[in-house]
Image (cartoon, one colour):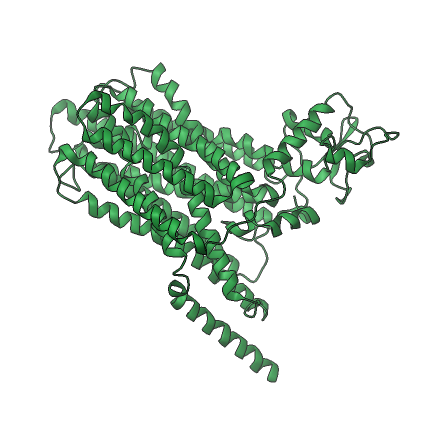
Length: 604
């Protein structure tokens, strides 16, 4: 009886703390969160209101044709994705997130000021500043994802500090589960709060009745002032930020060591016994026989199987100790080799997203060109492009948040531990597959809209609804759903297949997948001038959109083949990376505690 009363009291106290935690969280963390969230708002506004209209700005401000404008815009998008990969690797290994965010934001402000200068002057020589702005904006945009990760890290640190000595978590398992569920929902809710504010600012500014000839100048000036002001707030709050600790060795250097050691031993034969590998503290049953030698799990395509040689021991009569060989980067442990090999199948999956990345490349180019050549419906000053992009971003964020809530709620309320690593992989594959189906639907919608628009343009019947921007709402909305499902699913699949010590590559991998199509569409535009003419009406984008639908359908089959071929094979249950969350907490990716844990346990 007393035990029941104690449990009831613990549950009541836990519930009471949770309610107070929700109500007072804003005030207790005023010294940190508003400064970071303000800069998140500025980045979101620049993404929607500035980057999205660059294609239209190039067409209106220069004598360049649509093809040149599309190439320049896709070059900016592709460079932005490439810079995200570089910046994330540098911040993870050397500088930390705060330093790199400061650098990227300063570069973004410089790019916005150059755009403001080019839009406020009629001199052709002044407009050349826009090419410098493209580079600065591409580099500065890489700080947006770092800032979101840094925001999640600060929230996680505040939650850990508030829990203190784990008094709330020391109760029953149900209380721990409920608190974990609450913590994750709080973090995601706070992250999406600045997004909503950025959407509201974009809507308000889009409906301001200003002269169409000064629209770009006003957009760029407001964006530069907004980001400059929020950047100053971000610097003011730096005194209270929690700084993440850098790992002893970066994952990029670990990959370099393994490739270096494997190349050095490339002529050696595979051993016939598992004992000829440098297991160190790893289990010796993580191998398989192939032809006349023993290989290490997991199985990877033939092109990367030679990485196993990095863990082959030297001759038995060698006078150099194993520890010294490892220190001199001539020998790697089996666990390190397996960690790096877990990345290989994910990079093979990059080819399956080629059609999807091509569709994303059209969002900021030819979708924008369509909107600028159709009658405005939402605003009276031709700001419908920003409204359409806002609809796409909002549907993307909502779909991601709904998937997160469904996954967290299923884990929270289910009584069975069925959501193991394999179940997470299946859920991620299903999510990506449905997102790629939405990409096919979006391509077919764009094809039908463009066919109708071309017919209306020939007949000069501008009263027809097919020549209004309202006809573009379905394809932008479906594209947003596709982005939310595919990009979130890619992260989940990455976390389910790659070992936890390599999870810091998830952002770089996602941007690498997306950026490849944005760069590959450039030679496509140059090689098929009949599809991509100097103007929209002289182009045949309907054929291009139809081709995108067929490509996405074909690559959906490729994705199914590769994912099912490498998602479940040779993954040992005891070594599975226990995926605790569909969107892993940023703390688990960057803290030294996790890094040290990965060196003391076998996770694969």
